[in-house]
Image 1 (cartoon, rainbow, N blue to C red):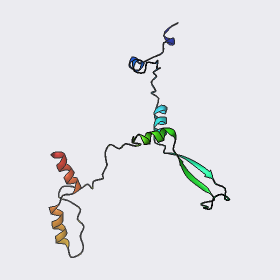
Image 2 (tube, rainbow, N blue to C red; image 1 turned 30 degrees about the vertical axis):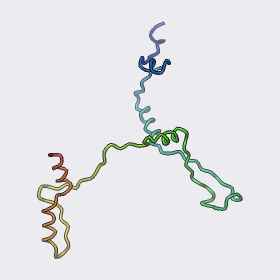
Image 3 (cartoon, rainbow, N blue to C red; image 1 turned 90 degrees about the vertical axis):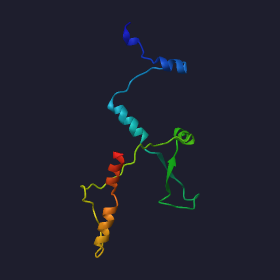
Image 4 (spheres, rainbow, N blue to C red; image 1 turned 180 degrees about the vertical axis):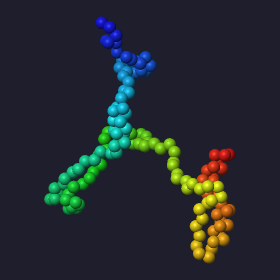
Amino acid sequence: MDNRFVVPYNPYLLLKYNAHINVEICTSLCAVKYIYKHIYKGFDCANMVLPTGQVQYNEIANYIDARYVSASEAMWRLLGSHMHDRSHAVMRLSVHLPNQKRVTFKDGHEEEALEAARSRQTMLESWFQLNQS
């Protein structure tokens, strides 16, 4: 007998659940890819065929794309847990050099457009000012 017969365990889990729990580490890239694929795959679907004699409504040859909610997903939603999580909103800022803002104007109203461009800040300038303060 040697160390090959010793099962790795976690003392914290052992005391918390009052049971022996084997602990293994999954470090392969395939395991991580499988977990993300399983989480973000979307809901399960089921196709059903309804006989024409029993149903009056006939839509696309009596095939209905129905949503199947499994027990785990139903419980997750009943408890009010989030299905997805976003940390930050991403906005695209139009980039320009200092004192070279983009100005859009109509014929005959060039001076008004120039004055409006001088008086207001672009989103990029506002972002720099926010980060500065």
